[in-house]
Image (cartoon, rainbow, N blue to C red; front, side, top):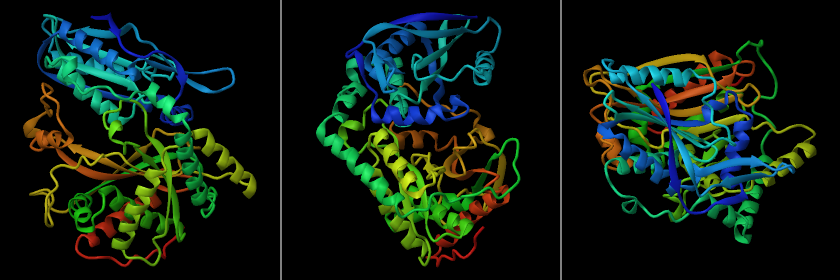
Length: 487
């Protein structure tokens, strides 16, 4: 049985304010995405012990009251400008799903979750209430699990993790005064971005985009090369022991991030695919360089752009340069989206052709690589392995030509069943890694999503195997890059 509980909340700040740069960036991406539900941030978690429903209600009330992002709806005015509307008090709905007497609670929750994830209306639109909480209770009325879904237009992944941590602490009985102070909000952000020095930051970001685009081709894949398909966007993922070993070995050896290591390998593989001497791709910048933004709950991430030349290099040199170029791109990742759009439109007119930015590199692991071994066998007893999976990708064919994603690939050993995290205390990323170390095997995997009319599935596999090959050799020694292959 399901019932809706209206949970009252009260917080600071309200009114109508301009949408922030981060909100605008994600909102723009959402508008052209298909299906839109991929922009929900969703987490299901099991409570460490049966919890009184009133405690869950109080925790949810406190969380919504604390954070402006959970009280924000986005909207457009008649002049097409984007705005955020914040309320300081009201009620937030909480769905309570009661497990019938005699039924297994986890099986009951699994059935509700399956129904939720198959529902066509689970997407949270920018104008909707931004968060949805489902609570699962036993026949006796005690909560044992919950699902939290939030709109990506008002929250990024980092913020969502912060919310989960705070929710866990509140459920464990901590008071709101025990939590970190909220010192910077999306309302504050909107005001700061309108100030002169932040406008200059946007100008620098636009100038950076211009400098990269002026020396880049309009598209890495300018023309259709293969027959059309009813579902042209394909997905190929490679799981390899070499990826795990490289992530454990090369960043420390070279003094770089593991994102830069994978980006260098992807740049090399894309150059071999296209036959170009350089590649230009979009990346995601989290924009959390300022100390006050470490605990910021809102949408900060924006796109940036990188151009890199692998030809005539060794892999170590390429990876080190990738590290520097990524830092530079991150530095210029804060800007007013309208300013960049105007600059791209002006370049389109100068070239008399549209600039195509549908090639993207994104590392979505956030460094969550656990059980990384040393030596030649990163997973004891498994030895070297490579495994490829494929299928259709959930993306629009006018947005994706060739995207390279670094992802977590999770395995749960059968002997330990479902992983359990102690939500009675807040866990840092390192602590969470240690908590799961004996329960999960987390391998970095690489996934290519591409429009098969431009990049065939066979060519997608070639990108992945080229990355695997160069990283496996780089573990042992530096590698002279041969970029002579091409389309």
